[in-house]
Each structure stands twice: as structure tokens, then as C-alpha cells.
Length: 76
Ligand SMILES: [Zn+2]
Ligand SMILES: [Zn+2]
Image 1 (cartoon, rainbow, N blue to C red):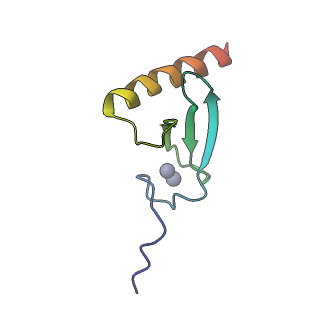
Image 2: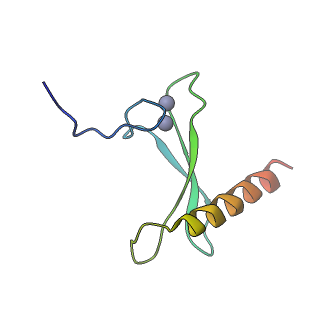
């Protein structure tokens, strides 16, 4: 049986229950995606282009920097 409809995260768990946490609103909505499975340390950043296009690697890197910075500020 092959039900490959459910997308898998790179951590190996189903992608669906992952929670998208909004961290910044500008210049683009972006945040972190965390796995709901206990003891799973998976987290990755996500970013949204206004036109729905996937981010380029450069944009993804910039988003990651912004999100990590924002998280660091929030923790202080
Ligand atoms: Zn996981
Ligand atoms: Zn995951």
C-alpha cells in the first residue's frame, strides 16, 4: 500500500501536525516550524512570499537570519 500523500518532514514525522509559529511580520511573514512529537528537536524556518513563489536560497538564508535574530531578541 502506498499512501504517499501525507508529506513527511525531514525529521521523519508527518508534516501536517507541525506548527508554524509566526515570528516576524516584516519584511515578509516568517517564522519557525516545530515538530509536535515529543523529544523531536526538529525546527526549521519558513517564509512567505507575497506572490506565493517559493523562496530562493538567498531569501531563505536571509529569512533564517531574521527569524533567529527575532527569537534571540524575544528571549532577552
Ligand atoms: Zn519530528
Ligand atoms: Zn519535523
